[in-house]
Image (cartoon, rainbow over all chains, first blue to last red):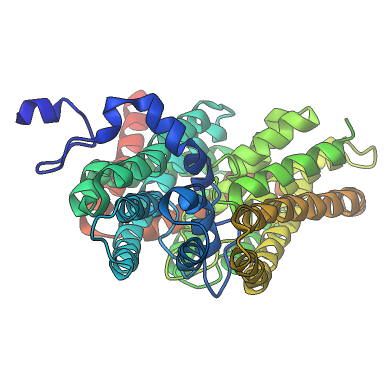
Length: 273
Length: 232
Protein backbone atom coordinates (compact mmCIF):
# COMPACT_ATOMS: atom_id res chain seq x y z
CA UNK A 1 0.00 0.00 0.00
CA UNK A 2 2.72 2.41 1.04
CA UNK A 3 4.83 1.45 -1.94
CA UNK A 4 1.87 2.01 -4.27
CA UNK A 5 1.48 5.46 -2.86
CA UNK A 6 5.15 6.21 -3.01
CA UNK A 7 5.13 5.31 -6.68
CA UNK A 8 2.60 8.08 -7.19
CA UNK A 9 5.44 10.59 -6.78
CA UNK A 10 5.75 13.96 -5.16
CA UNK A 11 2.10 14.53 -4.46
CA UNK A 12 1.55 11.49 -2.27
CA UNK A 13 1.61 11.86 1.51
CA UNK A 14 0.72 9.40 4.18
CA UNK A 15 -2.96 9.51 5.00
CA UNK A 16 -4.05 11.35 1.87
CA UNK A 17 -6.86 10.16 -0.28
CA UNK A 18 -5.82 9.00 -3.70
CA UNK A 19 -6.16 11.86 -6.15
CA UNK A 20 -9.32 11.84 -8.18
CA UNK A 21 -7.70 13.52 -11.19
CA UNK A 22 -5.57 10.50 -12.04
CA UNK A 23 -8.70 8.73 -13.23
CA UNK A 24 -8.87 11.10 -16.15
CA UNK A 25 -6.19 13.71 -16.62
CA UNK A 26 -7.83 14.97 -19.78
CA UNK A 27 -11.12 15.52 -17.96
CA UNK A 28 -9.26 17.39 -15.22
CA UNK A 29 -7.55 19.66 -17.71
CA UNK A 30 -10.84 20.27 -19.49
CA UNK A 31 -12.53 21.20 -16.26
CA UNK A 32 -9.72 23.26 -14.73
CA UNK A 33 -7.77 24.51 -17.74
CA UNK A 34 -9.63 27.81 -17.71
CA UNK A 35 -8.61 28.39 -14.11
CA UNK A 36 -5.03 27.17 -14.49
CA UNK A 37 -3.90 29.79 -17.02
CA UNK A 38 -5.50 32.48 -14.86
CA UNK A 39 -3.27 31.47 -11.93
CA UNK A 40 -0.36 33.13 -13.68
CA UNK A 41 -1.90 36.61 -13.58
CA UNK A 42 -3.21 36.69 -10.02
CA UNK A 43 -1.22 39.76 -8.95
CA UNK A 44 -1.95 41.83 -12.02
CA UNK A 45 -4.53 44.02 -10.29
CA UNK A 46 -2.81 44.09 -6.86
CA UNK A 47 -3.93 47.06 -4.79
CA UNK A 48 -3.54 48.41 -1.27
CA UNK A 49 -7.06 47.59 -0.11
CA UNK A 50 -7.85 44.03 -1.20
CA UNK A 51 -4.37 43.07 -2.49
CA UNK A 52 -4.99 40.13 -4.83
CA UNK A 53 -8.74 39.82 -4.19
CA UNK A 54 -9.73 40.62 -7.76
CA UNK A 55 -7.07 38.26 -9.12
CA UNK A 56 -8.38 35.51 -6.88
CA UNK A 57 -11.91 36.09 -8.11
CA UNK A 58 -10.74 35.82 -11.72
CA UNK A 59 -9.41 32.31 -10.93
CA UNK A 60 -12.57 30.98 -9.30
CA UNK A 61 -14.93 32.79 -11.69
CA UNK A 62 -15.08 29.86 -14.18
CA UNK A 63 -16.61 27.77 -11.36
CA UNK A 64 -19.19 30.36 -10.42
CA UNK A 65 -21.98 28.86 -12.51
CA UNK A 66 -21.16 25.34 -11.30
CA UNK A 67 -20.86 26.16 -7.63
CA UNK A 68 -23.76 28.55 -7.15
CA UNK A 69 -27.33 29.04 -8.23
CA UNK A 70 -28.08 31.99 -10.54
CA UNK A 71 -29.17 35.17 -8.80
CA UNK A 72 -28.34 36.10 -5.23
CA UNK A 73 -26.35 32.94 -4.54
CA UNK A 74 -24.03 33.68 -7.48
CA UNK A 75 -23.65 37.30 -6.37
CA UNK A 76 -22.82 36.19 -2.84
CA UNK A 77 -20.19 33.80 -4.28
CA UNK A 78 -18.63 36.67 -6.24
CA UNK A 79 -18.63 39.07 -3.28
CA UNK A 80 -17.08 36.41 -1.08
CA UNK A 81 -14.11 35.95 -3.39
CA UNK A 82 -13.66 39.58 -4.37
CA UNK A 83 -12.55 40.42 -0.84
CA UNK A 84 -9.07 40.63 0.67
CA UNK A 85 -6.64 37.96 -0.44
CA UNK A 86 -2.90 37.79 0.19
CA UNK A 87 -1.13 34.48 -0.22
CA UNK A 88 2.06 35.48 -1.96
CA UNK A 89 2.78 34.40 -5.47
CA UNK A 90 3.82 30.80 -5.50
CA UNK A 91 1.30 28.97 -3.35
CA UNK A 92 -1.75 31.17 -3.87
CA UNK A 93 -2.57 28.53 -6.48
CA UNK A 94 -2.82 25.87 -3.79
CA UNK A 95 -5.19 28.09 -1.81
CA UNK A 96 -7.29 28.65 -4.94
CA UNK A 97 -7.42 24.87 -5.48
CA UNK A 98 -8.58 24.30 -1.90
CA UNK A 99 -11.30 26.95 -2.23
CA UNK A 100 -12.50 25.41 -5.52
CA UNK A 101 -12.62 22.02 -3.80
CA UNK A 102 -14.67 23.36 -0.87
CA UNK A 103 -17.02 25.37 -3.07
CA UNK A 104 -17.72 22.31 -5.20
CA UNK A 105 -18.39 20.20 -2.10
CA UNK A 106 -20.78 22.86 -0.88
CA UNK A 107 -22.51 22.96 -4.27
CA UNK A 108 -22.97 19.18 -4.07
CA UNK A 109 -24.83 19.68 -0.81
CA UNK A 110 -22.11 18.58 1.58
CA UNK A 111 -22.09 20.40 4.92
CA UNK A 112 -19.42 23.04 4.21
CA UNK A 113 -20.25 26.41 5.76
CA UNK A 114 -19.31 29.63 3.98
CA UNK A 115 -17.49 30.74 7.13
CA UNK A 116 -15.46 27.55 7.02
CA UNK A 117 -14.30 28.33 3.46
CA UNK A 118 -13.35 31.84 4.50
CA UNK A 119 -11.38 30.70 7.53
CA UNK A 120 -9.53 27.96 5.60
CA UNK A 121 -8.68 30.47 2.88
CA UNK A 122 -7.27 32.96 5.37
CA UNK A 123 -5.38 30.38 7.42
CA UNK A 124 -3.76 28.67 4.44
CA UNK A 125 -2.86 31.99 2.80
CA UNK A 126 -0.57 33.11 5.58
CA UNK A 127 0.82 29.67 6.37
CA UNK A 128 1.82 28.76 2.83
CA UNK A 129 2.98 32.18 1.62
CA UNK A 130 5.88 32.59 4.04
CA UNK A 131 7.41 29.18 3.31
CA UNK A 132 7.15 29.51 -0.47
CA UNK A 133 8.46 33.08 -0.54
CA UNK A 134 11.48 32.12 1.54
CA UNK A 135 12.28 29.15 -0.67
CA UNK A 136 12.06 31.12 -3.91
CA UNK A 137 13.23 34.60 -2.97
CA UNK A 138 15.98 33.79 -0.49
CA UNK A 139 17.29 30.48 -1.81
CA UNK A 140 16.38 29.42 -5.33
CA UNK A 141 16.48 32.76 -7.16
CA UNK A 142 19.80 33.91 -5.60
CA UNK A 143 21.31 30.50 -6.44
CA UNK A 144 20.11 30.59 -10.05
CA UNK A 145 21.08 34.21 -10.60
CA UNK A 146 24.52 33.65 -9.09
CA UNK A 147 25.11 30.80 -11.53
CA UNK A 148 23.76 32.93 -14.39
CA UNK A 149 26.03 35.84 -13.39
CA UNK A 150 29.12 33.63 -13.15
CA UNK A 151 28.51 32.28 -16.63
CA UNK A 152 27.65 35.73 -18.02
CA UNK A 153 30.97 37.07 -16.66
CA UNK A 154 32.64 34.75 -19.14
CA UNK A 155 30.23 35.60 -21.97
CA UNK A 156 28.24 32.35 -21.81
CA UNK A 157 24.44 31.91 -21.84
CA UNK A 158 24.61 28.43 -20.30
CA UNK A 159 24.18 29.58 -16.71
CA UNK A 160 21.21 31.72 -17.67
CA UNK A 161 19.49 28.79 -19.34
CA UNK A 162 20.28 26.59 -16.32
CA UNK A 163 18.74 29.23 -14.04
CA UNK A 164 15.56 29.51 -16.10
CA UNK A 165 15.14 25.73 -16.22
CA UNK A 166 15.87 25.16 -12.52
CA UNK A 167 13.62 28.00 -11.39
CA UNK A 168 10.71 27.13 -13.64
CA UNK A 169 10.65 23.47 -12.61
CA UNK A 170 9.89 24.55 -9.05
CA UNK A 171 7.77 27.46 -10.25
CA UNK A 172 5.39 25.33 -12.31
CA UNK A 173 5.41 22.59 -9.67
CA UNK A 174 4.29 25.13 -7.08
CA UNK A 175 1.71 26.91 -9.17
CA UNK A 176 0.10 24.27 -11.37
CA UNK A 177 0.94 21.37 -9.06
CA UNK A 178 -0.18 23.34 -6.01
CA UNK A 179 -3.53 24.10 -7.62
CA UNK A 180 -4.08 20.48 -8.63
CA UNK A 181 -3.18 19.28 -5.17
CA UNK A 182 -5.51 21.82 -3.59
CA UNK A 183 -8.40 20.67 -5.79
CA UNK A 184 -7.71 17.03 -4.94
CA UNK A 185 -7.12 17.30 -1.21
CA UNK A 186 -9.11 20.34 -0.17
CA UNK A 187 -8.37 21.22 3.43
CA UNK A 188 -5.89 18.32 3.59
CA UNK A 189 -3.25 20.46 1.93
CA UNK A 190 -0.86 21.59 4.60
CA UNK A 191 2.62 21.55 6.01
CA UNK A 192 3.42 18.02 4.81
CA UNK A 193 2.56 18.99 1.25
CA UNK A 194 4.76 22.08 1.35
CA UNK A 195 7.59 20.18 3.05
CA UNK A 196 7.49 17.61 0.25
CA UNK A 197 7.24 20.28 -2.43
CA UNK A 198 10.33 22.06 -1.15
CA UNK A 199 12.16 19.06 0.25
CA UNK A 200 15.43 20.20 -1.34
CA UNK A 201 15.31 23.46 0.61
CA UNK A 202 18.46 22.80 2.65
CA UNK A 203 20.35 21.53 -0.35
CA UNK A 204 19.38 24.57 -2.43
CA UNK A 205 20.33 26.89 0.45
CA UNK A 206 23.71 25.22 0.77
CA UNK A 207 24.32 25.36 -2.97
CA UNK A 208 23.34 29.05 -2.99
CA UNK A 209 25.90 29.83 -0.27
CA UNK A 210 28.60 27.79 -2.03
CA UNK A 211 27.87 29.42 -5.39
CA UNK A 212 28.01 32.86 -3.77
CA UNK A 213 31.47 32.02 -2.41
CA UNK A 214 32.61 30.86 -5.85
CA UNK A 215 31.21 34.05 -7.39
CA UNK A 216 33.08 36.24 -4.88
CA UNK A 217 36.34 34.38 -5.47
CA UNK A 218 36.04 34.67 -9.24
CA UNK A 219 35.41 38.39 -8.88
CA UNK A 220 38.65 38.80 -6.96
CA UNK A 221 40.51 36.89 -9.65
CA UNK A 222 39.02 39.04 -12.38
CA UNK A 223 39.82 42.19 -10.42
CA UNK A 224 43.43 41.08 -10.00
CA UNK A 225 43.71 40.43 -13.74
CA UNK A 226 42.06 43.75 -14.62
CA UNK A 227 43.87 46.10 -12.25
CA UNK A 228 46.18 44.25 -9.86
CA UNK A 229 46.27 44.67 -6.09
CA UNK A 230 44.63 48.11 -6.24
CA UNK A 231 41.47 46.61 -7.75
CA UNK A 232 41.49 43.67 -5.32
CA UNK A 233 41.65 46.00 -2.30
CA UNK A 234 38.90 48.24 -3.67
CA UNK A 235 36.77 45.18 -4.45
CA UNK A 236 37.14 44.02 -0.86
CA UNK A 237 36.14 47.50 0.40
CA UNK A 238 33.05 47.59 -1.84
CA UNK A 239 32.13 44.05 -0.84
CA UNK A 240 32.37 44.88 2.87
CA UNK A 241 30.44 48.13 2.46
CA UNK A 242 27.70 46.39 0.48
CA UNK A 243 27.44 43.63 3.12
CA UNK A 244 27.17 46.26 5.86
CA UNK A 245 24.54 48.30 3.99
CA UNK A 246 22.56 45.36 2.59
CA UNK A 247 19.92 45.53 5.31
CA UNK A 248 19.12 49.20 4.58
CA UNK A 249 15.62 49.82 3.16
CA UNK A 250 16.76 51.48 -0.08
CA UNK A 251 18.91 49.00 -1.89
CA UNK A 252 18.93 51.15 -5.04
CA UNK A 253 20.47 54.02 -3.08
CA UNK A 254 23.15 51.73 -1.67
CA UNK A 255 23.95 50.42 -5.15
CA UNK A 256 24.03 53.92 -6.64
CA UNK A 257 26.37 55.24 -3.92
CA UNK A 258 28.77 52.31 -4.21
CA UNK A 259 28.76 52.46 -8.03
CA UNK A 260 29.50 56.21 -7.93
CA UNK A 261 32.29 55.64 -5.40
CA UNK A 262 33.78 52.94 -7.62
CA UNK A 263 33.68 55.21 -10.68
CA UNK A 264 35.36 57.99 -8.66
CA UNK A 265 38.02 55.56 -7.46
CA UNK A 266 38.80 54.57 -11.04
CA UNK A 267 38.90 58.15 -12.34
CA UNK A 268 41.10 59.42 -9.49
CA UNK A 269 43.32 56.36 -9.78
CA UNK A 270 43.67 56.96 -13.51
CA UNK A 271 44.57 60.64 -13.06
CA UNK A 272 47.09 59.92 -10.28
CA UNK A 273 48.80 57.17 -12.24
CA UNK B 1 12.42 47.07 -37.08
CA UNK B 2 13.20 50.42 -35.52
CA UNK B 3 15.51 49.78 -32.52
CA UNK B 4 13.51 52.04 -30.19
CA UNK B 5 10.32 50.18 -31.08
CA UNK B 6 12.03 46.78 -30.61
CA UNK B 7 13.37 47.73 -27.19
CA UNK B 8 10.03 49.22 -26.13
CA UNK B 9 8.02 46.17 -27.21
CA UNK B 10 10.45 43.93 -25.36
CA UNK B 11 10.19 46.12 -22.24
CA UNK B 12 6.38 45.97 -22.42
CA UNK B 13 6.46 42.17 -22.62
CA UNK B 14 8.96 41.89 -19.77
CA UNK B 15 6.92 44.31 -17.65
CA UNK B 16 4.06 41.81 -18.06
CA UNK B 17 6.30 39.00 -16.82
CA UNK B 18 7.49 41.06 -13.88
CA UNK B 19 4.29 42.80 -12.79
CA UNK B 20 1.47 40.45 -13.72
CA UNK B 21 2.93 37.59 -11.64
CA UNK B 22 3.57 35.45 -14.70
CA UNK B 23 7.10 35.47 -13.23
CA UNK B 24 8.97 33.19 -15.61
CA UNK B 25 12.06 35.22 -14.60
CA UNK B 26 12.89 36.23 -18.15
CA UNK B 27 12.55 39.78 -16.83
CA UNK B 28 15.67 39.49 -14.65
CA UNK B 29 18.25 42.04 -15.88
CA UNK B 30 20.74 39.43 -17.12
CA UNK B 31 18.03 37.86 -19.27
CA UNK B 32 16.41 41.18 -20.22
CA UNK B 33 19.82 42.51 -21.25
CA UNK B 34 20.49 39.49 -23.43
CA UNK B 35 17.05 39.72 -25.05
CA UNK B 36 17.53 43.44 -25.66
CA UNK B 37 20.89 42.61 -27.18
CA UNK B 38 19.26 40.13 -29.53
CA UNK B 39 16.56 42.66 -30.41
CA UNK B 40 19.18 45.32 -31.18
CA UNK B 41 21.58 43.00 -32.98
CA UNK B 42 24.34 42.80 -30.36
CA UNK B 43 23.60 40.03 -27.83
CA UNK B 44 27.16 39.95 -26.44
CA UNK B 45 27.13 43.61 -25.34
CA UNK B 46 23.53 43.23 -24.19
CA UNK B 47 24.49 40.31 -21.97
CA UNK B 48 27.46 42.26 -20.57
CA UNK B 49 25.37 45.30 -19.62
CA UNK B 50 22.52 43.19 -18.21
CA UNK B 51 24.93 40.99 -16.27
CA UNK B 52 26.65 43.97 -14.62
CA UNK B 53 23.28 45.37 -13.51
CA UNK B 54 22.21 41.91 -12.34
CA UNK B 55 25.41 41.35 -10.39
CA UNK B 56 24.94 44.66 -8.57
CA UNK B 57 21.51 43.53 -7.34
CA UNK B 58 22.25 39.85 -6.70
CA UNK B 59 21.60 39.88 -2.99
CA UNK B 60 18.46 42.00 -3.11
CA UNK B 61 15.52 39.95 -1.91
CA UNK B 62 12.02 41.29 -1.25
CA UNK B 63 11.68 40.84 2.50
CA UNK B 64 9.90 42.76 5.25
CA UNK B 65 7.69 44.57 2.77
CA UNK B 66 10.62 46.27 1.04
CA UNK B 67 9.51 47.14 -2.48
CA UNK B 68 11.42 45.73 -5.41
CA UNK B 69 13.00 48.07 -7.90
CA UNK B 70 11.80 47.60 -11.45
CA UNK B 71 14.84 45.73 -12.66
CA UNK B 72 13.04 44.40 -15.72
CA UNK B 73 12.81 47.88 -17.21
CA UNK B 74 16.26 48.68 -15.84
CA UNK B 75 17.73 45.66 -17.65
CA UNK B 76 16.25 46.64 -21.00
CA UNK B 77 17.19 50.30 -20.48
CA UNK B 78 20.84 49.65 -19.61
CA UNK B 79 21.39 47.32 -22.57
CA UNK B 80 19.53 49.49 -25.06
CA UNK B 81 21.32 52.67 -24.03
CA UNK B 82 24.70 50.95 -23.96
CA UNK B 83 24.34 49.29 -27.37
CA UNK B 84 22.71 52.21 -29.17
CA UNK B 85 25.02 54.87 -27.68
CA UNK B 86 28.09 52.85 -28.68
CA UNK B 87 26.74 52.81 -32.23
CA UNK B 88 26.59 56.58 -32.26
CA UNK B 89 29.24 58.24 -34.43
CA UNK B 90 30.28 60.68 -31.70
CA UNK B 91 31.32 57.94 -29.27
CA UNK B 92 34.81 56.53 -29.32
CA UNK B 93 34.61 52.72 -28.99
CA UNK B 94 37.27 52.94 -26.29
CA UNK B 95 34.81 54.89 -24.12
CA UNK B 96 32.83 51.73 -23.35
CA UNK B 97 33.37 52.05 -19.60
CA UNK B 98 31.99 55.57 -19.50
CA UNK B 99 29.01 54.66 -21.70
CA UNK B 100 28.31 51.69 -19.42
CA UNK B 101 28.50 53.90 -16.32
CA UNK B 102 26.07 56.48 -17.72
CA UNK B 103 23.74 53.75 -18.98
CA UNK B 104 23.80 52.09 -15.55
CA UNK B 105 23.03 55.41 -13.89
CA UNK B 106 20.07 55.92 -16.20
CA UNK B 107 18.84 52.37 -15.63
CA UNK B 108 19.01 52.82 -11.85
CA UNK B 109 16.80 55.85 -12.33
CA UNK B 110 14.41 53.79 -14.46
CA UNK B 111 14.37 51.01 -11.85
CA UNK B 112 13.60 53.47 -9.04
CA UNK B 113 10.99 55.31 -11.14
CA UNK B 114 9.41 51.97 -12.08
CA UNK B 115 9.09 51.07 -8.42
CA UNK B 116 7.53 54.45 -7.66
CA UNK B 117 5.07 54.10 -10.58
CA UNK B 118 4.13 50.63 -9.41
CA UNK B 119 3.52 51.79 -5.84
CA UNK B 120 1.42 54.65 -7.19
CA UNK B 121 -0.53 52.19 -9.32
CA UNK B 122 -1.10 49.89 -6.34
CA UNK B 123 -2.48 52.75 -4.30
CA UNK B 124 -4.97 53.58 -7.08
CA UNK B 125 -5.78 50.09 -8.38
CA UNK B 126 -8.61 49.58 -5.91
CA UNK B 127 -10.82 51.33 -8.47
CA UNK B 128 -10.62 48.12 -10.52
CA UNK B 129 -11.89 46.09 -7.58
CA UNK B 130 -14.66 48.65 -7.08
CA UNK B 131 -15.65 48.38 -10.74
CA UNK B 132 -15.56 44.59 -10.57
CA UNK B 133 -17.74 44.60 -7.44
CA UNK B 134 -20.25 46.81 -9.22
CA UNK B 135 -20.35 44.49 -12.23
CA UNK B 136 -20.65 41.41 -10.01
CA UNK B 137 -23.53 43.08 -8.20
CA UNK B 138 -25.32 43.34 -11.54
CA UNK B 139 -24.59 39.68 -12.31
CA UNK B 140 -21.97 40.39 -14.99
CA UNK B 141 -19.33 38.08 -13.60
CA UNK B 142 -17.29 37.47 -16.74
CA UNK B 143 -16.95 41.23 -17.22
CA UNK B 144 -15.87 41.61 -13.59
CA UNK B 145 -13.16 39.07 -14.27
CA UNK B 146 -12.21 40.88 -17.49
CA UNK B 147 -11.61 44.06 -15.46
CA UNK B 148 -8.78 42.20 -13.75
CA UNK B 149 -7.19 41.19 -17.05
CA UNK B 150 -7.49 44.71 -18.43
CA UNK B 151 -4.71 45.70 -16.02
CA UNK B 152 -2.31 43.61 -18.13
CA UNK B 153 -2.59 46.25 -20.84
CA UNK B 154 -1.57 48.91 -18.30
CA UNK B 155 1.55 46.97 -17.28
CA UNK B 156 2.51 46.54 -20.92
CA UNK B 157 1.83 50.20 -21.71
CA UNK B 158 3.91 51.45 -18.76
CA UNK B 159 6.87 49.27 -19.75
CA UNK B 160 6.57 50.30 -23.39
CA UNK B 161 6.18 54.03 -22.73
CA UNK B 162 8.92 54.30 -20.09
CA UNK B 163 11.44 52.47 -22.26
CA UNK B 164 10.52 54.38 -25.40
CA UNK B 165 10.97 57.69 -23.56
CA UNK B 166 14.24 56.65 -21.91
CA UNK B 167 15.79 55.26 -25.09
CA UNK B 168 14.62 58.15 -27.29
CA UNK B 169 15.93 60.80 -24.91
CA UNK B 170 18.72 58.77 -23.37
CA UNK B 171 20.72 57.59 -26.38
CA UNK B 172 21.59 61.11 -27.65
CA UNK B 173 22.24 62.25 -24.08
CA UNK B 174 24.56 59.32 -23.31
CA UNK B 175 26.35 59.75 -26.65
CA UNK B 176 26.78 63.50 -26.05
CA UNK B 177 28.08 62.99 -22.50
CA UNK B 178 30.45 60.24 -23.56
CA UNK B 179 31.71 62.38 -26.43
CA UNK B 180 32.17 65.43 -24.21
CA UNK B 181 33.92 63.76 -21.29
CA UNK B 182 35.95 61.18 -23.21
CA UNK B 183 39.68 61.46 -22.55
CA UNK B 184 41.90 61.13 -19.51
CA UNK B 185 38.89 61.09 -17.17
CA UNK B 186 36.97 58.39 -18.90
CA UNK B 187 39.64 55.93 -19.94
CA UNK B 188 40.14 54.30 -16.49
CA UNK B 189 36.41 53.50 -16.36
CA UNK B 190 36.94 50.48 -18.55
CA UNK B 191 37.66 48.63 -15.29
CA UNK B 192 34.04 49.09 -14.14
CA UNK B 193 32.71 45.65 -15.21
CA UNK B 194 35.39 44.06 -13.04
CA UNK B 195 34.56 46.09 -9.92
CA UNK B 196 30.81 46.78 -9.90
CA UNK B 197 29.78 43.13 -9.32
CA UNK B 198 31.48 43.34 -5.90
CA UNK B 199 28.36 45.21 -4.76
CA UNK B 200 26.32 42.05 -5.36
CA UNK B 201 29.00 39.86 -3.80
CA UNK B 202 28.74 41.91 -0.61
CA UNK B 203 24.98 41.60 -0.39
CA UNK B 204 25.25 37.85 -1.08
CA UNK B 205 27.74 37.67 1.77
CA UNK B 206 25.20 39.40 4.01
CA UNK B 207 22.61 36.79 2.99
CA UNK B 208 24.91 33.94 4.00
CA UNK B 209 26.20 35.07 7.37
CA UNK B 210 24.76 32.13 9.32
CA UNK B 211 27.04 29.42 10.69
CA UNK B 212 26.34 26.69 8.12
CA UNK B 213 25.80 28.90 5.10
CA UNK B 214 28.73 31.11 6.08
CA UNK B 215 30.89 28.00 6.17
CA UNK B 216 29.63 26.96 2.72
CA UNK B 217 30.26 30.47 1.37
CA UNK B 218 33.82 30.24 2.63
CA UNK B 219 34.12 26.72 1.20
CA UNK B 220 33.09 27.98 -2.24
CA UNK B 221 35.54 30.86 -1.99
CA UNK B 222 38.42 28.64 -0.86
CA UNK B 223 37.69 25.98 -3.47
CA UNK B 224 38.24 28.46 -6.29
CA UNK B 225 41.40 29.76 -4.65
CA UNK B 226 42.78 26.25 -4.08
CA UNK B 227 42.04 25.26 -7.67
CA UNK B 228 43.93 28.36 -8.78
CA UNK B 229 46.90 27.59 -6.53
CA UNK B 230 47.17 24.01 -7.82
CA UNK B 231 46.76 25.08 -11.44
CA UNK B 232 49.52 27.65 -11.14
